[in-house]
Image 1: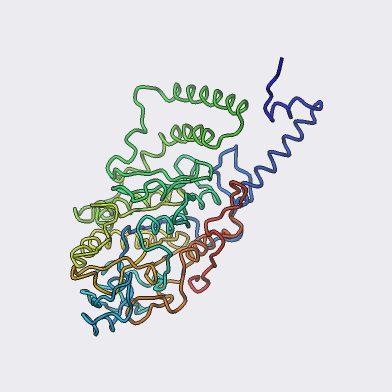
Image 2: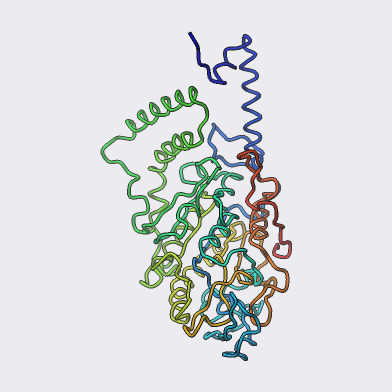
Length: 469
């Protein structure tokens, strides 16, 4: 007769207790290898409990305003007089094997604030907050296509599955409210790479984003009027015991552990989440500030207002996707003027309202706000369609709050807006800087998977000191 024993059973039974000591050491080694980014143990076994950063943090939380499709840098935050001067002339640079005619921006730029930073008339409300904003005019990416560009900006990898930025941040820091998710992603429309943009990949599944698409009923399936809280508590406890027995026999499975924790979190959320997601409690003045009262700005206004409510209640990372009307609304290969104007009108007022509200509440100092898409757009016209092509070689993004120098432009593209020629900032550099502002060393925030220590910035990335206050 043969007896089949698992490794855990063998260690538990062998050596009159010696196996238990060895097992404890093995588990401790495994935990240490997997939790390099966390320097404190989880409270009561909860992987989302608050964790100490590697060093003093300037920011405690993040709101990422992601604009899928690629906003045009030369039409928003990077004015190019030479482009206007040479409008319609052949471009001095070929792109994708073609020489195209230069296309001047149809919008005027104006200086704003004490800093005098020039901003397009597309963003008058955001421009009024420019002294709180650091505009990076020299962003560089590796992929000119939407799927790879979105993945690189959101996960640090443009091909393979990797944990998202929000997942890495919650893995490294946990969250300050155990009754709400640590990472929430909000978008009314589909995403080009779906859950990969906010997923956890090989990190424990607890760290993936909770996705919300319905702005009016964000958590429609959370409440359960047919079963009392007491009965739910008993059922969840019983289910947890059964799951723990299964884990003890079959070995650790992060997916099952995350599933157990998701039931617990859902139960706790029944008490706190309805209040957090209820925008009706906001004053009419607050709703006007975000544009919730206007049809054109209502959707993104609700996203921004909800983001403020979540971060002030301890949610660590909130990502907003502007996907109203499509999964990549900023992708203007044609009809640039109508497309960018529609997108800017829908987002400008809510973004400015968010910045103003965070500052008034004392939250901007330790909340990092990020704006941008997966890449920019070419200074040349795409054919005769009055549009612009994808462009990853020099584009604009901006940061505000959370230890960033406001009223600053960093880096530069050439006189036409083709290439980053001064202080280029790669996506890995941006990620390294974001983690640094949160008190995390991007080279130490690692997770061992398939025999390798992975990190958000892969094997590169540097902190851009010039952005820091």
